[in-house]
Amino acid sequence: MIAQVVLLLGVTAPDKLYFDEVHYVPAARQMLLPVLREPILNPMHPPLAKEIIALSIRAFGDTPLGWRYPATLFGALALVGVYLGALALFASQGRAVAATLLAFFNQMLFVQSRIAMLDIFALAFGLFAIAAFIHGFRQQRPQLAFALAGLAAGLSTACKWSGLFVLATCIVIVAVIRLMQGWRTRFADGNAEDWYRPELWPNFRGAHFIGCFVLLPALVYLATFVPLYGFSFADIVEAQRRIFADNTTTAIASHTYMSSWPSWPFLVRPVWYLFEKVGDDRSAAVVFLGNPLILWPALIALMVALRDWIVARNRDAFLVLAFYLGPYLAWALLPRTLGFIYYYLPAATTASFVLVYALTRKGAPRWLLWAFVAVGCAGFVAMLPITAALFETSMATYSRLMLFQNWI
Image 1 (tube, rainbow, N blue to C red):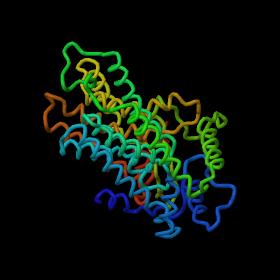
Image 2 (cartoon, helix red, strand yellow):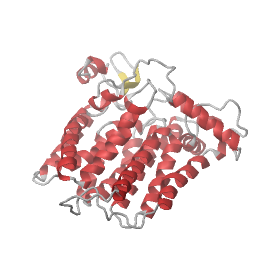
Image 3 (cartoon, one colour):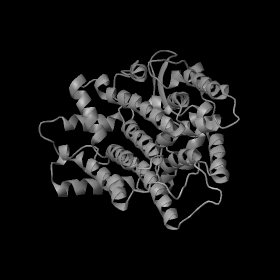
Image 4 (cartoon, one colour):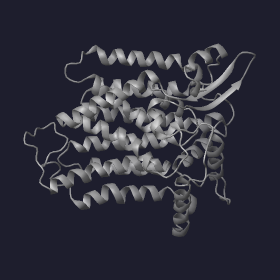
């Protein structure tokens, strides 16, 4: 509730469509028509997020609040997902709160929660899927938790196909563990903290796997197309073909703000959602960049987690690495040449798990985590003039915050 109040502050600025809202809001408006007209707008993405925006427009009117309210709601829910995931990981409320604050202060979630785009909806459902999976990972009977993970991953995919990356990560983890169990793999000095144990999930069968991670996600995903196409199998299949064609296209070669996936963790090339003059020396600006005081140290934390997974076989290190690298490295497998740093949003958010893990390892002073959260908060506040349009900024402030030429 606190998160949503904060996200709602000044959310109606600017009072016009900006950046990719020009694609998604008209598509949502079209869904409210008594009879759906052809051609269907924005057919290159699944409909769920646009359907949620459409419901908000019906409830709050065709206004900036109506367009953006659902993003603030799902931004707040995404933070709940981070909290639940961290609680399942660390079994510590303090660490879970710290992870939630780091996810908020990393800047990306804040910016994406105040614009009518699809990514925040996919992120929120994806984080609930991660939280449910991590909870199930520790259970002897994970069927219910894994079913909830599959359900949430299906809803994430119904917002944007990048939601498949979380589902694929869950599938790969289960498949690898089942494969090692099939090989009767054992560690000579095995213990309860190992990421792999031969006795894990003794009653989780192949039918459970298919139900949780194939049938349930597919059913909830396809159900979101029914309000648009009814029960026309041919139309729903054609919709999938169009989405696939767009998401694998190499036809669009360049864009002003494009960047490649290896550069995203280093915050090399931001995306300017908005920059316009509102006075003689005042501008309204919204940049999707990320808080360098959080996301650059996260790269060091990744090395720490990688070392602990390889050397100590640590289960928590394995899980935080999996849900950071899975949604991130999946982009390397796509033939699509056009990429933007906001595709890094899921990995940047789960980087908060990696940071909390690294900062609370055995031997780390207890104050270190909260000192880091305070530093991240300071960076977040310093960058507010270029992440929220309600804070008008001078050119001097803008120039001071643009540390590198690539950020302009």
